[in-house]
Image (cartoon, rainbow, N blue to C red):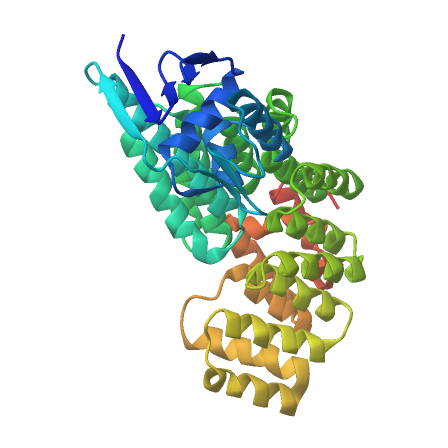
Length: 434
């Protein structure tokens, strides 16, 4: 039978046969412990992060990080490896693990089976890396996430999670305005349907379809069924919980939405994406002090997180603290790479005319050239009291399927328009109720 063998002194791992020997004796291992050992030995001498291990060994599910400690402990016991003076597995505090047998060798017997297995491992790693970049919720990480997932698909076009995570990346790129909604959502839907066609029980495929139905088609019941099925298949799937929580927020069940996100926090307590999602729930509930608190928690985990700083700025705006709102906006722009000199006109306009002057400056910039989203123009006109103009822009944003309108029924930024007679019609177009 074709097989791959990894040898490190007295230790031999026969990957295909799932057999481990040490000093001539067979070592009994649970299946996942064997997989962890094989992965570590393939990367012998190099630090392997805990997240890399989780993504490689459990590519289709979100599991608690603590499961790694369980398997590492079992491996050490089976290999008689003292953690205080390890021969094989070294723990790198707060980072991961390193297999110390850097003098090992790899031998193969057979034709292409070992190559196929190596390719499969590469696919798992690429999808795991793409998933991590997506869950960072950072604008700058999305193009690289897309590249990694396309590389995974090139290696194995039949691996459903690769297509599904690519669909989620494309949805995120539309939301962050890296691509236009029509093209971006069409690609996302094609990838999600491809994933489902390959494996209709893939958790990632169900999550991806739910995201497309929610963000681009405003099919609330269809999206809810998809998220619920994903959570039946994998009750601890972080993205499923976050997206389902967002849907519950959008349809007005904000307490349930927050509870769903807090359950995601229990399983993934160090995720900036989870913290930011909780901040969004508090924003919808108009609990702005809590919005600020959770946005700051996000920045503690990732100081360069642009969306967290936007949430801070938004909360200060909603509280009427325009000075701090401007401070956070300037910090946001600087983090984005805008020079201090380029921001001087904005500072001067604010100093001379206050918040209203900044809004008028936005309209002047929009008139000077294309590029301002219709939804943003609706918000600016609404805040200035130009309600009919605001409604016209909002209607065009609906025609363009702007994904930010998912939150139209609950988000505070739309409060200036809620009393307008046309606002109810806009909600109906999005499939939402007042």
